[in-house]
Image 1 (cartoon, rainbow, N blue to C red):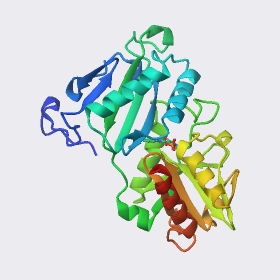
Image 2: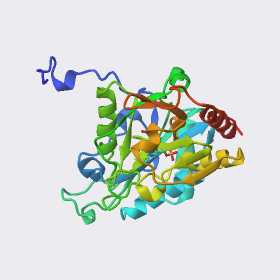
Image 3: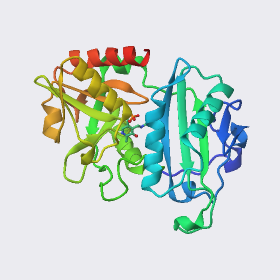
Image 4: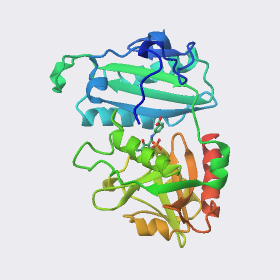
Length: 304
Ligand code: PXG
């Protein structure tokens, strides 16, 4: 329902406004968040033309920094976007943003946009890509979610077709994921599982998917159209170290319904149990022992 705004647009108070003391690193300098503005002609805004990374800071250290930097260059390369900095400079910018805001445990959002240009989708119409680094605290699922597990729905919205923009690119257009998340919220669930156009399971809206059944841990291969998640890689390794057989295999909805355990992995959520899909309980409807083991192993690993 559309209602008339009560106050003029410019007089609205945004309840989600960031801490005004936050310093943002933008194109070579730290600026107060109130001054860290993206131009209305930035192709990142006009067309979603850009890439990003979400990175955790644990105990003052940038977690898996090299992997995230490699992935942002790979995402950028795929969309023919030249990052106007070396990996070393990018790393220094992250440290500057982290230091300026005294973040010890938090989150880095690294963005590269095509920059301000002329109207028009041709990349030649934007010559100066912009780099932004935000270091801040992170909004996580509350602890009880890790104890009870997530209730998920099958999203009607599909994951990007691999022949459109590759799902391996962390692009500034997350609308499919946003719409899938909205489907979950509208259904009273926590999260949505997206499928690809062939009906194969891919991942959650911002997390990779794992299914455990009869001693084998499975996750869809990257070729199914999923982000090559950094947490995914760590968790596969942790599971193997526990002697669990791990394989990348095509999964359909059936495999989730009949799984003993299901969980999601990602930078923000780390390892989070899934206890139902479309209101059907997975296993006994409680986080399972393998999931709990890997949750603990992940916490130990990231504190190493
Ligand atoms: N799939 C998708 C679509 C993602 O966006 C993951 C899987 C997990 O990948 P990593 O490398 O993080 O294990 C992601 C990651 C945010 C945010 O602010 C999103 C992600 C990560 C951190 C923050 O929404 N997505």
